[in-house]
Image (cartoon, rainbow, N blue to C red; front, side):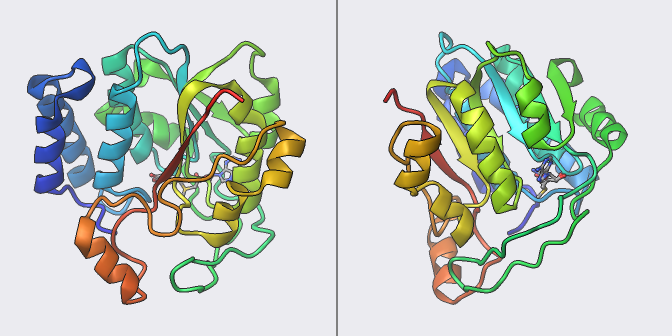
Length: 264
Ligand SMILES: C[S@@+](CC[C@H](N)C(=O)[O-])C[C@H]1O[C@@H](n2cnc3c(N)ncnc32)[C@H](O)[C@@H]1O
């Protein structure tokens, strides 16, 4: 997918006016995000359009819903920049969870749902140091909203305060085991009605996690929540995205899917 700013997506986002945020703050936010992208080409695994979708989701969180925004997997920090801008506007904290050493050992194979090709992840891929992430957010985002949680999710999540809640979760952790760790330990902290975004909506083995009733009933005592956008990703680029998918190409469109936490 193209990580570069897209003027049509920007215009649609600015004109939405939802969540009590009109054209003024939206325009200022897009301006900052565009500048961040132009100054940091190649440093992001999420596209400009995907980041606008995440920002929109944050702006729409009902004000009375408690909790921070929790991000799992930040790489060089570009998705964190986007989330921090939305966190600042909505008066929330952004918790950035990452090893800051890149991916752990990949373990089980993962296949792209459209092409069935195996995704070739290696230990250490997508490494971004905490210092570099901090510097990037300080330059382009809102560092005062951010808290950084360094280490592997399975370890760090267990040490979080028991009463900590999340109003929105975004995971972009690539690996099945990493996503499973986030679901196991962070899902219980998600507020009722909160959104859980995954950046792995096109990856077969990760998608399966969201539909596995047996697993969910043993870990959370609920049925599996499913994943909106599973297989193709949320339709950020509309027809273009479908056309590329039908042609067996995996580079266009979005990898985003989401699910809502509903009261059991
Ligand atoms: C694809 S990158 C994230 C890309 C980023 N969201 C962006 O937009 O550029 C995946 C990230 O997940 C982190 N990660 C994956 N599994 C992890 C785990 N089990 N614990 C901590 N970090 C993990 C890696 O360190 C890496 O920063």
